[in-house]
Image (cartoon, rainbow, N blue to C red; front, side):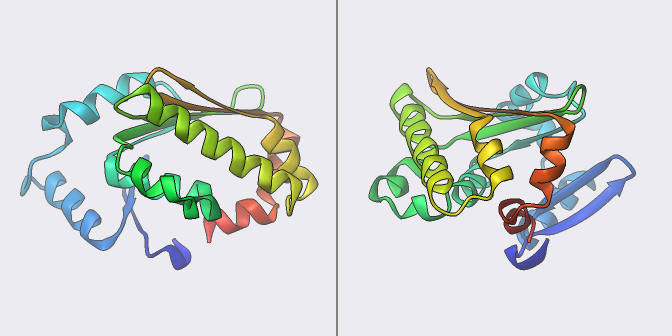
Length: 180
């Protein structure tokens, strides 16, 4: 997956796994019965019912959630409080649906309301900064169509776009930077 150091493996025509080399080895060992698998991890299993009916979905453990949020926040991770807050990101799940446009829902689970609210503020600040500095027109539209809130201990990110808006976003510098 480009310069990120992440690897991807297709297990079958409908299942792919991705992560760093150590993570991939652990996943394949679990699949092959050489290590405990996800079925023994109740925290991860509890995340699945909220997303499993979506066209595209994923669940992330603590390390994966921290990596994802670091990528999303970009330069905003330089904020002093981020290193403290990062350790409190427990897990996450996201889902995408493509009926009547594109809908993306991300839930990041934290141990308390304060952490979720702090992350919401950081993401909103990062989005505002991007909109007012370097964002292309399609990115500005996408950022405006993104709602970032917190609910108890959950950071919630909701995005909705028409098919044409999403097609424009796929060509943007922002999207290209994410997939490098």
